[in-house]
Length: 386
Picture: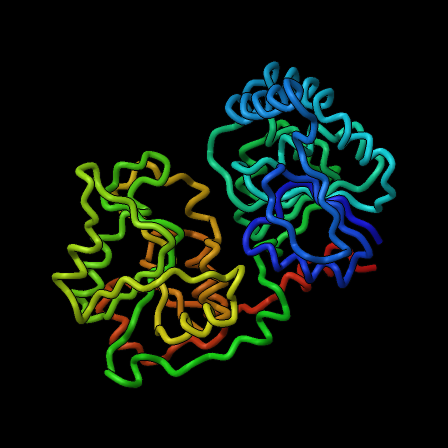
C-alpha cells in the first residue's frame, strides 16, 4: 500500500517510522523546512520549490491564506494562486499511484491549506482527516477539510461532539467517524526500549514532581496562552505542599522587565526547585524517558480559575506531555475541575490522579499504575491495515 500524507509529521517525527511497517511508500506533502526522516520508504514533496518571483509569491500567498483562513473569498483566491505557483509538486502528485490520503493534525499547522490546495487531485482516494488541537473560532479551512473528508479521527467522544456542535451545517451522516485514537501516540520501538530508573524519592523520601513544557513565561502577558505558560504561582504551591519541583523546558521567556522569574525562584528555593536541562524526545528519546522516569508526578495542565483565555477545547484536549509521562511511568496529576476529558480518563481508566488539594499527593493510599502505552503502530494499523 501507498499513502499520501498531507502536512508536517509533527514532533516527535520518529513515530511515523511505525507507518513504514504498514506502507510500502509514504509521500509527505509538507513545507520546505520540514526535517526529513532518513528512510527510503518516506518521500518528501515540499512546497515553494519554484524560483524567483513565483517562489516569493507562493510564500506570501500561503501566509495570507493562513492569516485569513476564516475568509472564504480570500482562501479560495489563495488556493488558485498556490496551485499555479506550486505546479511542479502538483504534477508530481498527479503521476503518483497512492491508495489513501491522510491529512493531519492541527488548526495552526499547514495541513488544512495543503489539503484544500490538493483536493482536486486527491478526491479519487479515501481522505482521512485526523484532528488534534483547535481554537474556538470558526474558519473556512477547517470546515472545508471536514466537508471533503471521507473519514474523521478524533481522540475522544468529547472531541467529536465539540466539532459536531461547532460545525452544525456539515452533513456528518455520510462520514465515517472514529474515536479514541490519537495520532500523538509514540513509536513502538522506543516504547519497548525505555528503561525506567529508580525514583528520586527513594533517596530522600520526598515526592518529586516534574513540569514538562516546550517554553515557560515569567508573566501572564501572552494572550493566546494566558496563564498556562506562567508556572510561577503553581511552582510556589507545589513547594508549599512539600513537593520537590523539577522544570524541564526548551526555553524560559523573561517578563516584561526582562527578568527571568524562574531563576529568582530557584535561588530562593535551592533544595526544592530545580531548573533542569531540556529533554529531547525526538533525537534522544531513550535517555530522555530514563531521566523523566525518576519523578513521581507530572503536571498535566496549568489552568488558572480566572484565565479568560482558556477555551472549551482546552478542557477536552489531551496534552502531548501526557504520553511522555505514561511511557516514563510518571503519574500525571490534575486539579479537579480544570478539564473535562482528562479528569474522566483519570477516574475511569486510572491513568493519573485528580486532586482537590496538593497536600493530597503526600497521603496517597493507592498509587495508579495503569499507564497508556499505545504505540503509533497501533494507531496507523487500526486505520489502514487490511
